[in-house]
Image (cartoon, rainbow over the protein chains, first blue to last red):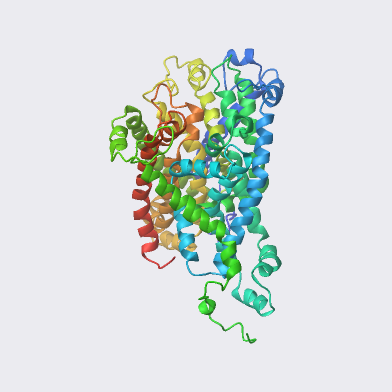
Length: 298
Length: 305
């Protein structure tokens, strides 16, 4: 049965290492792990094989001859339509979308959250409630009005337009994140600064910002993975030349022309998944915190 | 402003005039614009235009419920709805079951907990496009899972969801669950960790078995966590789009179409705007139907803004 450990997951080891309970427990976990790891494994081995070896047939078998040709091709030669400069184009587009989107959305949302926590004004809670409810509205109902708005300000099809869209749709969850964090900062600190004569921006930059660095990291993880993985906004608000990586990837893999090169496809897929994966493995617990924050929205 | 700061009660500094607290109001302009113009304005605009006959360009010539009548007599929409219903129901049940079971297993004070959690959660970091393409390859009928099992000696084995319009939605379901269940596991695990150790002790003293304790005591206690998870899963289900586009692109034929895809194709490809608006309004309605009871459960008890 269960060991009585008062705190933390690392309780004392069960007495018998190979009890039925343990075999069942770890057996299930390992079996499930196989299901979760399988796609990653298959992607990696496929991308390292040559096409003849793939045609012979087994997606699970490790490559007999390891070749990185597929990776090179996916990065710099794969074709979408008439452009044959590979996924690198989409990668740089995504970088150009990502950086301003992350900076702008976090800057805007952190100031919003700050205003909502210590500088409430008449109606601020109402706007916040609308914002949070808005997070649940299907994007589809807002897609076309945004097309019109972007056209009006001349940013339709432009990377700048997509940056705005990401800022707008990142706002509910990020504002909530920052509002909750700033609310937890003691009121006394805020009041002391007020007494010392600090105003809205002074308190934000001198006190709140330095104290909120961890939450900024969480917000960054959330936004970088979210924006990098976006497909819908990319496909609607950009032109083929400025397609983000996910859209270009889909066009490369699902193009109907030419012979299917599964190894190139898988290399391209892995390349696109690499950025969020690196962030995931590097950030560890912070990633979990980010999604947990995303989970309690509303 | 004197120096007795600490004893002042919080709501004392609520401003009355328009120009008090001006910086905060200016700083909130992006939020106010987003809330009013994009969320309220955009949604209203779409709903209003769903009652028109707009095709290439939006225009305000109202035709009543025509678009909705057409929508509900279009096979493609009906298939989309059916797919979403199957996907939604299975995904809710399976994701909740898998998420909770994994969380419960990880909560049994096991070794390598972090490793297992990392493995279960990493798909969530990947995009739906990557997920869809990876599973498209694994489920490839000529080289994928089906062929491998046949090579192992089970000659008649047949599982080719991507070529078989009857089961294609389950092919998408496998990928969807792979991507999303880690998140629910994480939320459930956080919920389990929040349960008082004394509950377990009490259950042990009473001689209640582990499984029974979970079913009878722990799960009822975790009701809020389950509700949060359900809302998360549900809002993800309605958004289902990229995964289908990447994995099957609606095929074979139109057998794996989903509502979100219908909307986008009608708005941006078929240039039948109002039809797309009507479909997206239906999506909105379904969200409202889910959201209201939840908001009632969540906020009905305690007073919050």
